Length: 599
Image (cartoon, rainbow, N blue to C red; front, top):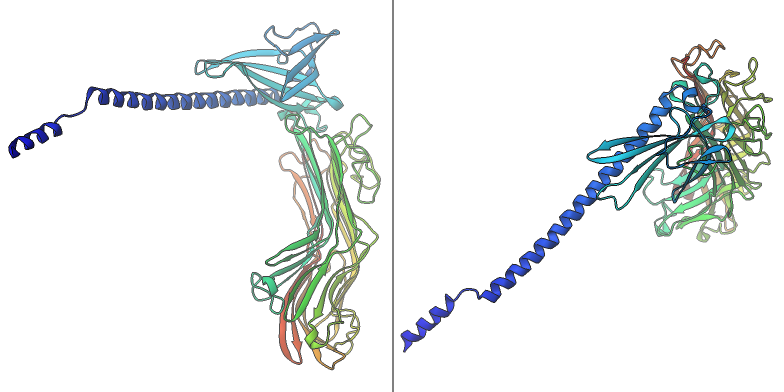
């Protein structure tokens, strides 16, 4: 009996899979393979679609570049009696004139079409068994310029209907390559203009003097590491090569603190950004202003008391830019509108900005802790007074006479001139003043540092009518040095100096306790720097600035820099210490002109 039972068990173990089980396994495997096949097919379709889009884009780019390489007249003249190719789908005849008309979601056009040997033409190109039809159109644009449009259409087994790729650009050279008239124009005729002007960023930063990432000794509640006081700034930039772009910005003063709960106020920016490339930007003229400016104080607190920065009040900014810039957009450094072109229908690109400075002072103050008996005494560390004079910056391509822009010889003329200029006035700057309630070294009656009357103007030009770049700076600085006397310097553009600082200011509380602020560090005044490339400048722009671009630059940034460490001592014992890095900014301008080839 035992033997028979073992035999039956053995027969069951060798029974194998049933037919139903085998069929079920095959169905599952077939389903998985079908799913994988679908994924593979979908992936191959996606790759094919991407490759075809890439090919269409390359053909559109090639079409634009071919137009640029042709003589200007070949591209832009209209041949009377000529008709577009029958396959030029987007050429429409209406009221005796041909138009380029598209109603595509991303390209809605209705522009007068030039018909010639290259415009209104199509060409079929086959790549990897897909036929691409390349449509080339040249149309009339504003201010005597012409838009270049290349459309590439194709249909394939994976395209799910007709696909369209488009590229657009602009060309302009009324007299052909023998003229260096205004950019943008065809590649053989390109001239090149750039201009930038404005302020370098200025401000005051308070940190740990030994490690800028560490909490500030005595003011480190919530891990406070940084206080910042930003000065207002503005700038303008212009770039012209085939297409034109212009940008301006203006930023109000602001304050910030970095701790476990960081905070900020002010620092509001207005930006105007325009571009003539018809395929990338719709805006041709723009004016923006700053909104929502606040001047709330920002503080760091600790065992030594509270450090507080507060921006000035009442400042605001305005930014403007235009491809065809009238005087409302192109405001010069003197506040007057500039004529960019010879008349209202031939205007040139320009960007300009303005900051109306704060009417009240920006400050860095120290409030000692009450246990020392100084709770009612706010001790001034640094202040920057307000001013009623706005700061302005302009970057322009000029083709018309103006009072103080590209005035050499007969002025800019049709060739044009790259122009960048800026101006600013800074309110009085004081460090360690007033001394009310405090006693400094004998003879230190104006505080540690006093800067007054700082005013700057910069101008750079290249092209027809360009003058040598100019930078002027006026003002006066007094620094109490470690020699226990004032060092005085008139802040001309070439002025420079460096002075060590070491002084103590003693305050006595109503309770008779003494608090000392010990200042050590350095004050540096730097001259403005001029750079002008040695490119040929004879006044004949058929010869000048062709082999080598003409570049002029003036940089007066970081004119006055203070680097100080302040120790806070109560009855001779240090209870806090912080560092002050103050960069009072400055003006800079750079322009470039490279003449078109004599083709």
